Image (cartoon, rainbow, N blue to C red; front, side, top):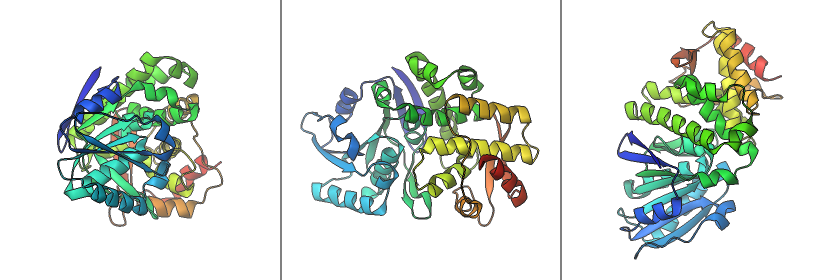
Length: 351
């Protein structure tokens, strides 16, 4: 087991390479009630937990981003109320980023906060969504616009879940890994450079190293800046345009696929405004494409994407701002770029 500590609103550990069921049963042994949230499609993969006198309740929610709705949230509150959940009880989220985002927000809002544990089952969840304490649900106007900063008491990463992923989902998770490489850890890029998705996936050792390195990047950033005053914004590299694509596509694309497109867009924009070199842009595209990730979003509509970006959580008032890098590991803000520059970058990724 590899243990990575996180210091945020509370101290907790991310445990990598653990067996999730016995770990959860141990962490649940002193609780009266435990609510287990998971996607409906995962129901057959969720075991029946046993831990002393603890009573377990199982709450399936709609798959993917559809589960992160106000209607599902209301139903979940009603479930918890009917089951008699108190502040000393526990919530567990088992699934991808949508499930852990949702379960964490339920925990943050029930009785003004009950403990929760994240068990991410996707690469994206393991390296990003389950770590850092960002929880939330979606609005009709954008992703995660309703949420709270509320950390889990533990994150359990069981590599057996990785074997259940399709190649598409595995690759989508690597977009968040690649992001971590560009903003903080160049060794990630060295590992991936010249490799194929098949080669990475075939090596458990490489996969776990990439996960561990990415978790360390996020843990270090979050520990220094929990509520995203400045340094934590680096973790949103590629996400401003990526979230706009995600909303525009009506979530038909994976989150990581949208992040990949967002990384391509912001690299083109950084070159356009003179912040990034052509060589570093080419490195972005080569590594993303090498993992089978998309770097373009054809048939899109600029006004819709721009409107969505203006609702991005990094925006302030009427000020649109992006995270860019000038070199690997050197991030900075780009505030209110000319729309002509943004359109030039957009045209590069819309073909």
